[in-house]
Length: 189
Image (cartoon, rainbow, N blue to C red; front, side, top):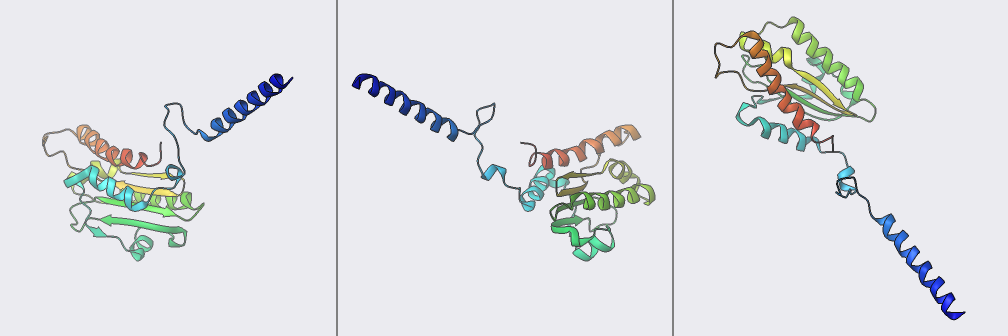
């Protein structure tokens, strides 16, 4: 009888130990474990720095966009903004602009609409230097929950001065995509 009781107790302990071990293991299909740190929201400054690093010398914005400019020029209701980092070109010949916004909780869609309205205005109403037309037409506004990004960035197709309009647009789209992919890497894990 003692042997049976000991065996039942040993099996119970083994099952309990296995259950406890199983509940402590957190992972995904590729074997990588997740942690509380990975689930935190990314820092806006980290995203901006990664975008700058991705473009290198082709990151042309050099003038800070102030809170007043965000409201008055870009049409963003700053009551919906928790944090932002934004830069535009200091030289009027360039159009390169990068705006990164962390909206207040639940306000990302509103900020996205405001920045998209400004981008639509720029595309429809601005008179650009010929070198900027493709970049302006390729620019994008993207949102990840309450993070919103206005991306009008990238180099120029200088190596192909005889490029067709379609080739210049494709080049500009690829340049914009570099920024979009960099931003996406912070949200699509």
